[in-house]
Image 1 (cartoon, helix red, strand yellow):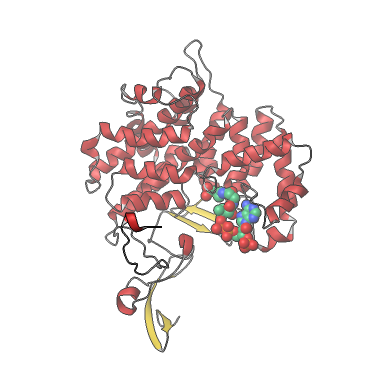
Image 2 (cartoon, helix red, strand yellow; image 1 turned 135 degrees about the horizontal axis):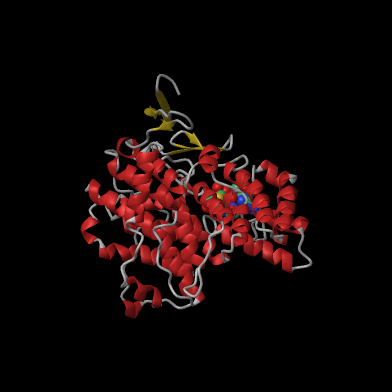
Length: 431
Ligand code: CMC
């Protein structure tokens, strides 16, 4: 790269490309006119080397293992903020002062109830339904109650929808769980904090008063913050992708939830604990055998909770969670054998050349499930908790996309490798 230009040589032709500067992190090379000018496209499976947007929300430095939201280190916000404070930071560019935080908290509390008709919606699912399926369906469904706020080009309507989504998500999540447990739905309580209210809706029963354990509330607050945003990950990119067609915010977020559900993304937290449980139950399985299987190219087994597209160093969220897992388990007085298995697996993997060469470290999902479990959540709710945490990040990215004049409908190209032209054969003549 010279003089603010990169040069691409195609055959004998030089094609200069503009540089897209970054404040920090990877610089871009603008290939947006390449096809129009030269008739070729770039090929980048999984968009691993493609920036689809400029963003000023979250910076991840995968080489150093750094994560910052709007310039603030994840360690600082996780230690000092409430989840709604971090949501405000992501959505409105800056940390709120005391008055702004109080107003924002009150605004969110104003919308925590679901329309009463939604109860029938939850009732209609089978008891066995995965709560992620209920969560994304309900997120889509509640938009039907607020259709006049669906226009993505109306900033006031977007703000109203954003507030509603953040306010109602804990209610939807808790009711998805209550449905699977066959227990009565518990209404939100606006005298409680965001996290306390969620815990109350999850675990209270109408027959007795429930006291919220402040240790559990504090732990969940930190966990939600650690999941709040992470750049252009699969679900956030999906939210932007869907929103780029000017689909409404609810529809875009519901699509992101479905992307999150997969075991290579947010579904990994459930998969990790299920994997650890299998190791625990199988006397023939130990860390060495697990690592051998993870390395075997003919075995589909992967070490869940390990590896990351961006981090080639320890995921800073996993670093916080590893220590936090010890603290939480000690505080709630739980001796979970899965934590010892996880620690053993981590050590064996980090000492292994296969994992070292590929720079595979524990990611956020490796320890989060063990903590969610210690807080009393069933494994099938883990990805739902990730979704509640990631919601402000999805909305902030969607807003940034809608407000960016450079946004165009997302529409990647392909490299066609199929039949070029075939003679049509009537059905009666086909072999
Ligand atoms: N166990 C064993 N080998 C692995 C693992 C793993 N968990 N992760 C990556 N590798 C190997 C992979 O086989 C490949 O080896 P080779 O170069 O010899 O073919 C190399 O490491 C690079 O992996 P990749 O699959 O090309 O990397 P990716 O960036 O496409 O995938 C990933 C990233 C997170 C999907 C992958 O590491 C993975 O499947 N991890 C397990 C699932 C998981 O924990 N997901 C949570 C991700 S973090 C939070 C979130 O986004 O939700």
